[in-house]
Image 1: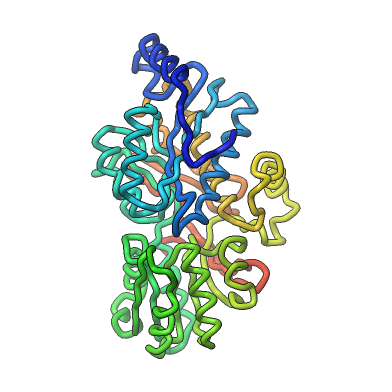
Image 2: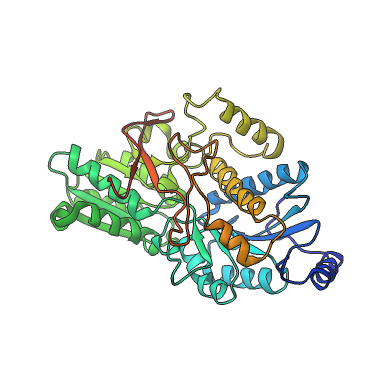
Length: 406
């Protein structure tokens, strides 16, 4: 399977879909499903300020290609329609409407970004189209009562930030905290979580905040202003482009804070190396997955299986980029749900199976991390572990943590 910024559906495929819908009705098959195919939609920023995340869509497409080569899902091949929204919510809305109303996809899988997903959440829920395994850690995806057709996948950004707050309170004397955050719900969730974790000490300990827009050329001025506050701790809640810029500027101006970096901007291949490995030494982040640059995983059966898949199906991708682990693992979750749905491939049943995952262990998640959901819990991954960058790769430390013990 290849992936392009736009993937079109042939007239013959559309006619086949219509014919199968008439033949089998909606009791067994939903939109986008035939005896031989399951059509899945996706939006991804293959261009624009968040284009580093395009690796996720490409790696998921590569995983589905492997599944198709193995016979598909109960004999049905996955047709993965992934389109470039450039990280622009209005474009996301346009593309998702096309995929639902024209391409007739069964569901939206892994659409990326807090703002883009916010823009389509009401439309998909109103039309009862699954918005599954959203590529964003915003808390709003775990709201089955009000949005029963939307489910996240990543650990909560607020939980992650509370973990950082806990570490700061436990280990750093006299912390003065500065925060750089993206000016949207994504960045603000980190700030909210930090305040939650610091509790009644938040107002005293947070001495400066600076936000950036995704249209900003750099965050250099924000970093200079945060240093001027006298802070000795920095939390950078950013996407890869701006995470790399922040690392570089902090180093270049001689600032040496204890630096915490959001988990969605900590890939060695797409962030740390572009920033300069020597400039990133000592940075602390958190993860739920095995980093492919960590020697402790290399040589294990799980890593070898992932690497073999990379070489055969995702050969143009950077094996040092943990976003390829993300796309691989998220796609595995989607495949597990489709398999569990059997021949009842309606939107309702797929959503029911997505909300019935029990302790699913995926090969490239950290030991002890498992995926679980229920009708009242739409947060599949709940645990993370702290890690520190040593100039070459990330080193895990401490225990697995979650919102309840952070």
